[in-house]
Amino acid sequence: MVVGVPKEIKVGEQRIALTPAGARAFSDAGHRILVEAGAGAGSGFRDEEFAAAGAELAGVAELWRQAELVLKVKEPLAEEVPRIRDGQTLFTYLHLAAVPDLVRGLIARNAIAIAYETVERADGSLPLLTPMSEVAGRLAVQEGAHYLGRAYGGRGILLSGVPGVPHGNVAILGSGTVGLNAAKSALGLGADVSLLDINLDRLRHADDVFGGRVITLASNAFNIEQVIARADLLVGAVLVAGARAPRLVTEVLVRRMKPGAVIVDVAVDQGGCIETVRPTTLLEPVYTLHGVLHYGVTNMPALVPRTSTFALTNASLCSRPRAQGTTPGRARRSRTGGRRQHLARPRRASGGGGHRRGEAARPRRASLGARSHVAGHGLRLESEGERVVAGGAVEPPARGEAIPRGEVLLAPAAGAGPMHARHHLGASELSQTGDRTQDQEGRHEHEVQPGDEHEAHGKGPKNASRSAGTDEALAGRGRGHGDDGRRG
Image (cartoon, rainbow, N blue to C red; front, side):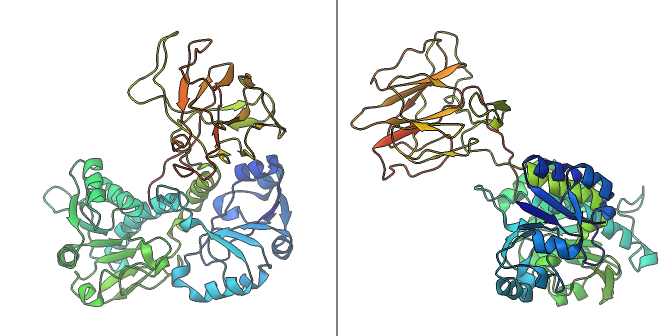
């Protein structure tokens, strides 16, 4: 695949979608990398670093013409949309809810547009939005504290106060990733912090994290009015994934705020949660309305482009969700494939931390449908009674045959009773006896019942339509690799 990384042209945007380390990862995987000359300068990366990592330097026209996958940071501007080819894949932050014209442009170009902010794990977390939300949340308080200075039109408030002088007051709407990171920064500066959210579980989490040092309030019209009236700094940190942010603060409420107070609306790129906030740039970040300073920069993390670039690349290249029912572990080299792979190891039955040599483990019930993707292998079992090895060969196994590590077995189950799958450090075997089998080395033993839901991968209905076969992925000593993220 040809991967293109153009230079960002949005005002004040200095981030780049890929670091030299990321370019090396793509190059090592056999992809061709095109990086626009000078694209990494704002984040402190020289063209020579990308070239040394295996990337090719290219002009903007050549890059857009050749790239099959275009990696960007911010949404394409009006002058970039015409460069998008039919069927070209675009991977970037889009925030389409606030820019309907861009939606129409992408549809007209017949592009495959994938938004970082809507990539979602099975648990609802947003792994590619989280790092920028962390940066934006911390910057919101840093920038707000800066503009509270009298020289910039603020109230002249030091958030930490001094002995004998009250601390500044910070109100944060939303306790997601942005809100929690904003609260962390505000507490670090010594401010009095109020955190509002409609999700009481999130508020409980915040109360535990901050040890009761944050005032947590249920978000409703009455409480919002109360906190806004006393706030020196108001942070909007509301997110509805893929949709426009709700308007929580009206212009009437803004008029009631203290003269010189500061509003920082992190949700402005999704339309904003404060009625009087409009998008601004890093060159002109603030404006004053009704005596209140408004900060509406849509790409706040671009203020710290090096930190943000590393955070984004770490998330986009290294964030791999853990398969349900597997434990984190390391990669190992397959005996047949020759390539290092992350393999999934089924967890032991709950309630036991292991067993002594020679003692039977508690049986763990698990089953797979006849066609099942094997986590970590990238293999698919195509038919019953076939064995798929890491090298891609498909062959029928003999009953009770020892399966070398790195191979996958789909056991025939026509009219058979419960299957017993065993694996140990050296090899795996499968038996169709109805009784508990004797492990030749007294190690792990797992019971498999046809029709049970597969706990290791969380896929397939409980009673799959193809119930004539039961398969079990046996991965020796390998462990799954993953990362849990929280909603941004």
